[in-house]
Length: 257
Length: 323
Image 1 (spheres, rainbow over the protein chains, first blue to last red):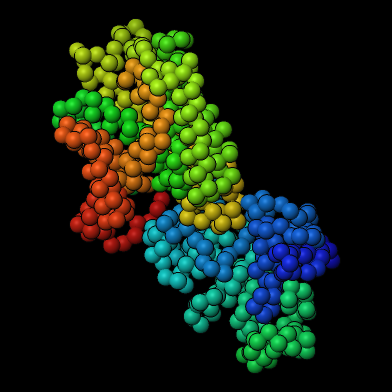
Image 2: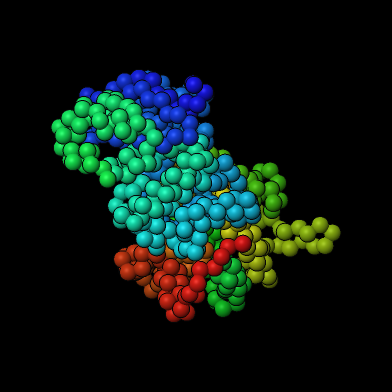
C-alpha cells in the first residue's frame, strides 16, 4: 500500500512565536486522489500548504514526497520535484501577456538562458497553448494578464501551476470569489486534472468539497480532528461540534446539497 | 513586435550627430544612453532600485584607464578591461546586496557606492584622487591590413560616435534577445511576483544576481567608453550624483522601454547643455521637469509618447496568435 502514498507528513508542527499553528499533523495523501483539507478559519490549512510547498520550514516533523524526504528543502527545489500550488489570493504575473504567464511557468529549468528567444522552444509554446485551451483562454493569449476578468485570472492561476507538469497540485481555495457557474466549471477542471495527478484542495464551499473529494482531513486548531471519506466526515460528531464551535454553519455541513 | 521601434531608434541615433551641432553632446548621449540601458535592465526589467550603479561605471572607467596607460594601448583590450571590472564588481556586490529586497537592497547599494567613492578618493596612487586619472592615451581602431582609424580626432569628428554606435547597436540587439529569452521573461516574472516565481522553481536570487552582473558588465562598458572619449577618468565616475543621474535619465525616458534610456539621456544632457550656458542652476529646471514627469507621465516620456501613439493609431481588434 505504501507505494501509492505520494505525500506523507509525520508529526509536522509549526509555531509562530508562541502560537502553535500546526501540531503533530500526520497525513498520508494517496496518489491520484482528490484529498481535501477543511477546517474553520485559522485551523492551519494555509500554513500546512506553506510547509508542504517549502515556503516556510516546519518547526519539527518530516515531509516525504514521491519517495524522498523534502523536509527543510527551499521552495524552488520543492517546486522542481513536482509540487505545484495555486493561491488563495490570485497570484499571476499581471504585466506579462497571458501566454507569457505560462511560458514563464514552464521554463524555470531554462532560467539562465538569455541568448535564445523563449518562443524558439516550440514544445513549450505548444504545451502552453494546450493549457490555455484547457482553461478556455486561448483566444486571450496576447492580452495582458491584468486585462482578464477575475474568474479568468483564477483559471490562469491554475494553468500556471499545471504548466510545471506537477505530480501533486495544491489548490488553495480555487473557487474563492467565483460565481456559481464558474465554480461548477472549476469542479469539472479539477476532476479532469485528478485523472492525471494528485490534487490536495483547501476549500470552504462544503457542497463542492463533499461532491468532489475522495478523502477529507479536518484540521482544527492546527491538529488533525478527523479523516475519512466525505460520508464519514459528514457523520462525524466531533467535526460537527468543531464547526459549530468555530462559528461555521452547521447547516452547510449537514445538508451540502 | 518591438522591432519597428528598434529600427526607429537606430535611425534616430544615426541622424543625431548631423542635426545636433554639439559633437560632445552626441557622444555623451550615446555613452550615457548605454549606461541607462544597463540601469534599465535592473530597474525596468528586474525591478531592483539601486542607488549605487556608478560603482560599475566607475570601475569600468578606471580599469580601462589603467589598461591603456600601463598595459597596452589597444582598443579592444581596454574595453574588455572595463567590462571585466564592472562584471567582477557586480558579482561581489550583487552577492551581498541581493540578500535583501526593496529598501534594504537600495540602502546596501548606496552604502557600497559611498564606500567605493571614498576608496577612490583616498587611494590617489591608483585613482589620482580628486584630480582623477590623468593622461589616458586614446587607442585607434585597427582594422588589420587595411588601416588604422583614430577614434578621437579633430579631422574626423564622427569616428568616435559611429564606433560607439556600432557597439550600442550590438548591445541593443543583445538586450532585445535577452528580454525575450527564458531568462528575461523569468526576470519580469520575479519582478511581478517573487513568491509565485519561487513556487514555479525559479531560484530567484540567482536569477536576479545574473541580471545584476550583466547590468554591471554593461555599465563597465559605458565607463570604458567614457574613458576613451574623455582621455581621463574623473573621480565623479564613482560619485553618488552619477548614480542619481542615471536613475533620473531612466525614469525620465521611461523604465522598461527600449527607447527610454536614450530619450532620458538625450533630454537630461540636452537640457544641461542648453541651460548651463545661461545659469549654474540648470539642475533646478531638470528637477522640476523630473517632478512633472513622475507625476503626469509615470511611464516616462517615451512611455507617454507610445501610449499616445497607440491611442492615436487604433489598436488591432483581434489578438494575434503566436507561432
